[in-house]
Length: 173
Figure 1 (tube, helix red, strand yellow):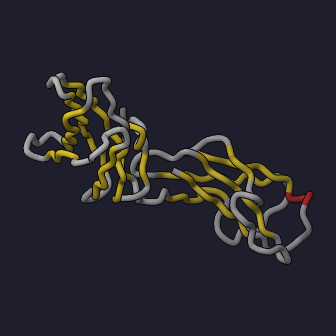
Figure 2 (cartoon, helix red, strand yellow):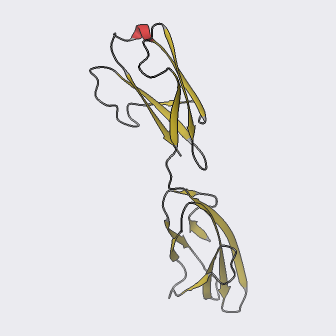
Figure 3 (cartoon, rainbow, N blue to C red):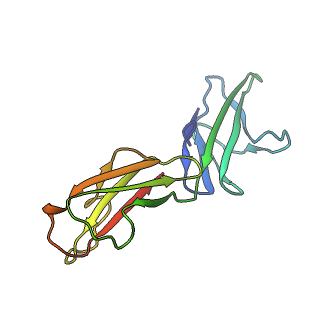
């Protein structure tokens, strides 16, 4: 079986320690790991005990990586596990569409924007810093917003003292 990475998992690193377990009551002859679609790109793992095998793989960059684990027992019976994961080292981005920078506002204020990522945006968080407030700590001083690609937050400015405020947005992939 493959313990890590999980099927379809997004990995924020180009170095991945692929791990798993191989067992058979009659014994394991070998475990091979085939990476991608090229039949020549495989490695035979040389563990003394295949119960817990691992292989450190370095991806050439972001993208989906397919791999097969081929387990052969001492009677040459073969089990093949097909898996994939996605390397995603690029951080998502967030942009504001409302309000315009340095706006003077009064009443109900709609703060709106968009988040983007090469693969997916999991969540977006919001914080508001007042003139005398410290920089908010993520995630403790942030509020999770609904929406990922398109997000918004409405606030009543009458709930706040006059002054310059800074909006913080954190997009998470």
